Image (cartoon, rainbow, N blue to C red; front, side, top):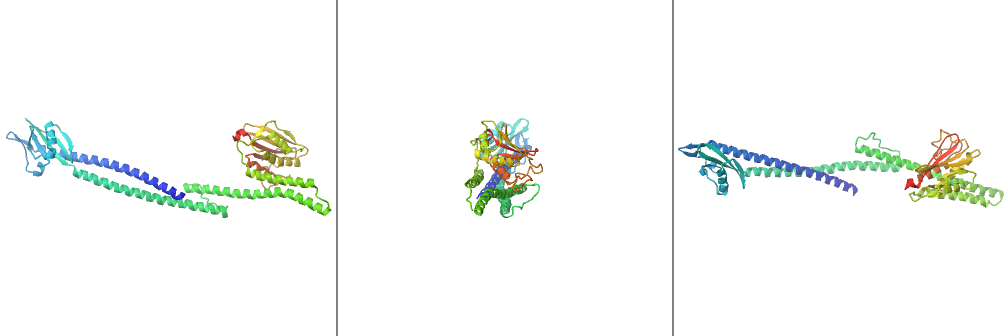
Length: 422
C-alpha cells in the first residue's frame, strides 16, 4: 500500500508538471501563431491595397481603376474618389464600415466579423482618393484552430508518456530498493556478516546500500551485545549460586546445618543482582528522575572502611538504586586491590558530577585500560566481568564510566545533573 501510494504520488506529480509545461507551451505557441497570422493578414491587406492604388488613374477628368475587369477583385477592393465609390461592389455587411474608412482619408486597419478591412489613401492631384481592401480571415482562423488542436493532441500524448515513463521508472527504482531491503532483512536474520560493500556512493542506491550496511553493522553489534549480556548475567548469578552450593555441600559432608547468615547473604546478593539487571533493562531516565548522590554513595559503602568526600545536597538525574548498583562493584574492586586505603571524591561541573573511586593499589595496566570494561576481558590484577556489568548499567542511564591508568586504582564515573536532562 505504501509503495503503491508513493508510486502514485510520484506519477501524479510527474503528470501535473507535464500538464503545466504543456499548457504553457500550448498557450505560448498559440499566441505566437496568432501574431504571425495577424501579421500575414495585415501584410496581405497592405499588398492588395498597394496593388489597387497602383492601378488608379485620372482619365477625362475622372478617377478610374485601370484593369478593372477582374470581378473577383471588385468584391475585395473598392476605390472611393471625392467621397464617391468609383470602382467595386461593396457588400451590405461591411458597407457602413467601408464608407467610414473611405471618408477618413487616412491609412487605417480594422476588423469586422471575419474580415480585415484596410484603407490606404492614393495621391492624385486635385482628387481625394482612398482604396479600401478586404481580407478574409477564415483561412487564418482555421489554421490557428488546427494548430491549437494539434498542439493539444501532442500535449495530451506527452502528458500520457510522462505518466507512463514515471510509472515505469519509479517502479524500477522501487524494485531495486525492495530487493536491497529484502536482502538486508535476510542477512540480518541468517547472515549478519554479509554486506553490500558498494564502495563510495555514486547515486541514491549507493547511499541506500551504505545505510543498509550500517544498519546490518548495528544489528551485528546488537547480537554481540546480547551474547555479552547473557555472559554477564550468567556470571553474576553463578557466583552467589556457587557459594550457596558450596555451603550446602560443606554442611552435607560435615553433617551440620547450613549457617542461615551465609545463606541469606548469598540469597540477598543473588536477588540484588537480578533486581539490578532487570531494573537497568527497564530504566527510562527523564527530567523528573533524581536522587541525593551523597546518600546513595553512603548506601553503596554500607559500613565498609571507605573514605567519602561528597558535598551535601548534590543531586544527580539517576535513580538511587542505579547509583548504588554502579558504585558498589567499583568499591568492591577497589577494596580487593587496595593496599590500605579506598576513598571516593566528587567534582561538580556545570552539566554533570564526576565521582572518582580511588585506591592505593597497583591500578590498571595502561595497555588494558580501554578494555577492562569489556565482557570476558580480565587483566592480570583480576578486573573482569563485574566491571562489564557496571558499564552496561551505567550506559542504560546515560552515565559514563572509564578506568584511568595513573599508577593507582582510579575509576571515573560521570553522572548527569537534573538540569542537563531537563
